[in-house]
Image (cartoon, rainbow, N blue to C red):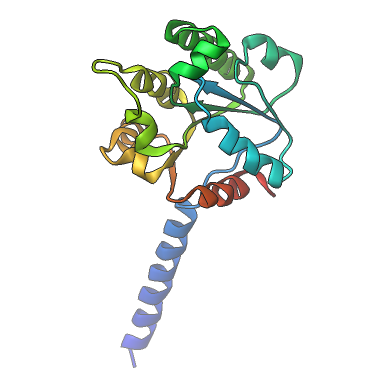
Length: 195
């Protein structure tokens, strides 16, 4: 009979711990409107835009967004999709150096304004290795320019096969939200933006 209150206490403490753990693992939320851009001119941001449109999240996609864009409208979240495309940069008439400078300035201005910064890598390991010439590390440069300075990272799981994003997440204490299939990206964005 004396053991019963102890069992109840242990059960309550266990349930509270489970509830706290579940709450800690809940995906972080972010406010709209959103400015969506790229670091590396890959087609990745288009995937993100498709879901933002479906979810009716107020946003604007500018592949070459600059500090001026942040100044013209009160964006509350900046999503920068990493991954480089030599074809995309060629079409835009920019180099990797240009992209890194633009991204650095965007992040600095977003931080100054208190805008939430989300670093995203949505094309998986194929984007990180696709068509890369020996010694070409432009994809890794785009990741380094964005992810360590983000408040949240959204990453397709197979893009983290080598633990690249997990390492950044742990070292910088940045929440890492992963998804496996492209359709799941919509669920991630819904949990973050749809109230």
